[in-house]
Amino acid sequence: ALTIAIVGLPNVGKSTLFNALTKNQVLAANYPFATIEPNVGIVNLPDPRLGVLAELFHSEKILPAPVSFVDIAGIVKGASEGEGLGNKFLANIREADAIAEVVRGFEDPDVVHVDGVVDPAADMGTINTELILADLETVEKALVRYEKELRLKRVEPLVHDTAVAARDALQRGEALSATKIDLAPIAELGLLTAKPFIYVFNVDETVIGSPERQAELSALVAPAEAIFLDAKIESELIDLDPEDAAELLASTGQEESGLDQLARIGFDTLGLQTYLTAGPKETRAWTIGKGWKAPQAAGVIHTDFEKGFIKAEVISFADLVETGSIAEARAHGKARIEGKEYVMQDGDVVEFRFSK
Ligand code: GDP
Image 1 (cartoon, helix red, strand yellow):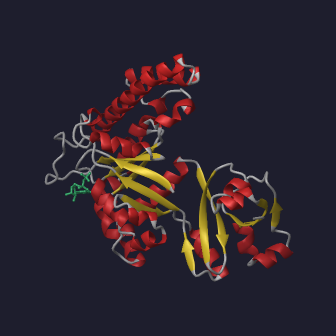
Image 2 (cartoon, helix red, strand yellow; image 1 turned 180 degrees about the horizontal axis):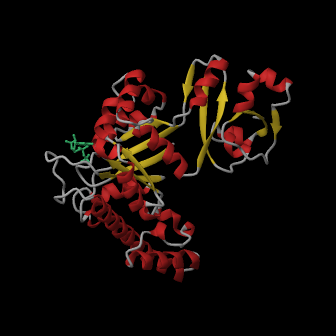
Image 3 (cartoon, protein in one colour; image 1 turned 135 degrees about the horizontal axis):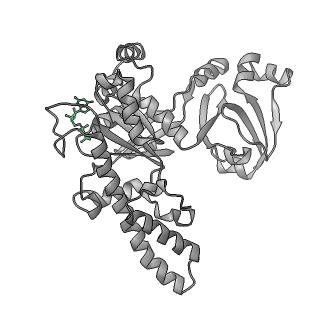
């Protein structure tokens, strides 16, 4: 599943947010991998289409696309030097597809700030520096190996040269995502500052109710996405039934919970989309990349579906809702038979045909 690592300084609200994420017990039962790792939490990608399909097909259950979050111990100054939890923590984020950085925006005299004052820009600077230093260390270590391998002709010169360019940028204090370097040749290094970032500002109601203040904070991180939430409210929302939760959200002036926003924006940031399958057993969303062709998309359900792919019957969600059933969609020529070259569209309702 898509994995987003949560990072941030200590005492910014990571655990509070993460507790809200892991309280999704029903979900955890559907996605067994979530219960294996205590530091993994799951959020559903919100998708109103699933409920509509489940009703049409009288599905027993609905399985939305899961987005998983990994909680990582807090970064402090010096984390990259292996102080405290540093190195173990860094190994954990290397595996993630994206990084959600929690930044403290709430004032509370009872909650100590590690550096004494609440200053979102300074906090982001601290984390940025630690991540750059961590990447620098990774690249320098790799370069020792690449230089040796280059003499033995066991590595492409491009790999070595890319690592040199990355090292130089990091030494100048640049995050790799801010450079134009094509890092594909050294993707194996899992460099942290090359990953997509989402900024999660943990704020109180004054900021949630202030578009001006949000615009200021967003400007600090642009072009990366910023989300504004109140971690304490998020952890209360998760204990409420849907109606009460909606009421509490509305009372704070929000339309969507912070966790839902996080799942949705994480999905967009990574250029993902879903296609749908529906039947009496389940209605389900499947995660794929934009531009994927039908066989690759089929492979997400089962590798046999990709290997033995013959064709796909595709109905767009809108056409299916309009006609009311697969049979009616077929009768009206809305069910298309697509082959290996078909490029999947978001919200396609699909049935694959394959040979074993
Ligand atoms: P972590 O170290 O980043 O995991 O931070 P925690 O989640 O443990 O939060 C640190 C303290 O801040 C706890 O006492 C939380 O109750 C409190 N806290 C977290 N989020 C908020 C918030 O949005 N507003 C206020 N006032 N306190 C918060």
